[in-house]
Length: 199
Image 1 (cartoon, rainbow, N blue to C red):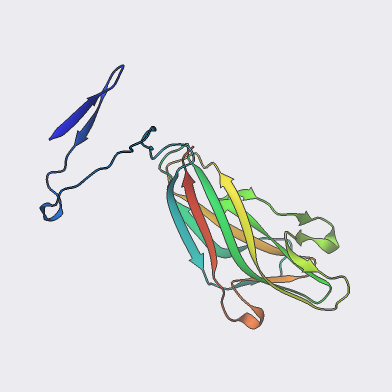
Image 2: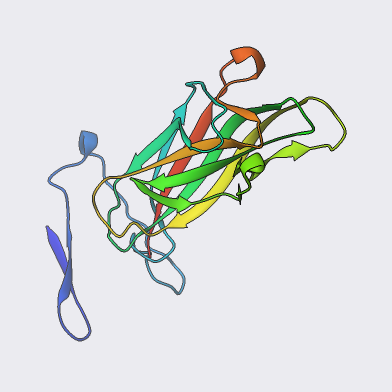
């Protein structure tokens, strides 16, 4: 049986019952008993889907001039081209420097396009990126374990699959390891969470 509701100006909404229910049990649909309206999936601000990806693959780099792939990547296929994608990065790192500081930075990519660039040094003796790290000013060796957190709201403007990833590099003669602790073990987990948000 189908119940049809006529709209006040034009058109109608049809409610079609399923052919049968599990074990023949009745299904009860409770409508709100107070003033208001039923929510729609695509209402602005609604979370339409959540994708979570992780990596434990260790990566170490001392290259201050080039970003290195951290192996943290996630893919989401938006339901609507107008949707936003909320990106939550939680990246495990280990920084080391035979001096008074240890810094590094992460870029975030959508496909091949950079959508986040960290603070960067430009002088030849202080190149690299330095969003995350520590400086004491008085020691001869610095070791820092931590988790880099980045939150971005992106507009990919597509309903095709979109891949996000991070790439990192150290700063000022430091080294940085992702998903690794000192000595190369144990491997720590990094995650990237992608949420499609209706616009």
